[in-house]
Image (cartoon, rainbow, N blue to C red):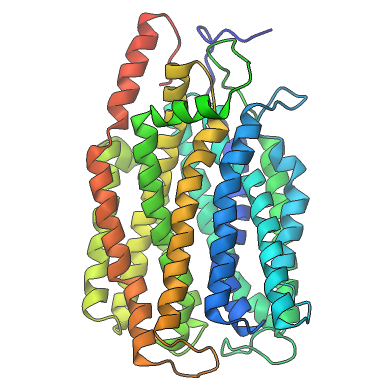
Length: 468
């Protein structure tokens, strides 16, 4: 029987369910962080693929990821599992394929350079496809588990806490694992003859963590939010696009996410090169990541109270301002040890708040679109904005690798040319600062709280229950 949304009151979520979100977020961020820090490095320094070609592999793969997002999201909107759910079961069915694809990313098949490039591209396509399937519950369940705004914000806080833990595993614990399995020596440098095996064994550990995280998420969560209308007709691609683009909040939140994604790619992908060639040790990246991790955890816990104190728009603007201010010292003196650590602290603050805010926005946007169109398209709300975000991330990756190539980067050199060092510093300093100024402009035009208030007032007038 169709649930009556007029009288539907979803009780507050229990800790166990929020912990399930945290666990899944931990696993997915283990993959993201490990891949972000070490995959380009693995391609250039282990497989010996030219940095420009390696950058093209990542760029083409990310473009495919962006393209398959709306394709898989569109299929998900028109598909229902046997248990009546649309998103959560993806965490069950694609846990193992996703983990296997992570392991394959770090395989050295001992082939020719041409074959190595082709294999790397094919495997990256496979990885990004499975990554999209497991991302559907990751990005959609916050809006489907509850219609209570406080719980949705809490879910996103737990997700970001899980992200911090996953980042810690990917950035901090992986270095000792790489050393343990013979990929790196005590100085954080590659060991000839055993580095490829060490990366493979570490990736296998990460894949096991992904399976545990996905299954925990599946068995601890539940889809509860039901569609207002009884409309279950097939949604066409054209009508789905109209639903998205007629919602101004979705368009602005998409731009907000794009800025976040570009910043994340530039900072996380550049830090290993900065540590290796500016600070003199690849292992130094671990300490910087640890500072970022601690600050992110503290900030995530404080995001809820900060949001209630300042309101969502002011909280988002505050996070962007912190990101910009944190770059000033680094831009002036990128070789100062204090500057890189201040950069890490402010990135931890700014990106953590931004993550919680844009995901809470995303949950509200699914409600707004449903109110405008009569259909819930949660998976398309998330995969649709991911299309644009990942295209932007692909551009950021291409910018990074092309800039390094043009600056004369050569992985065989123990010390890089001055132009390469200046490029690395720019990718960590003034370039993300410019992106954040664009983010501020987007935030000035966004007012999702006003949109939600208008929708809830209309619902109340019609006797339909609203989120708190």
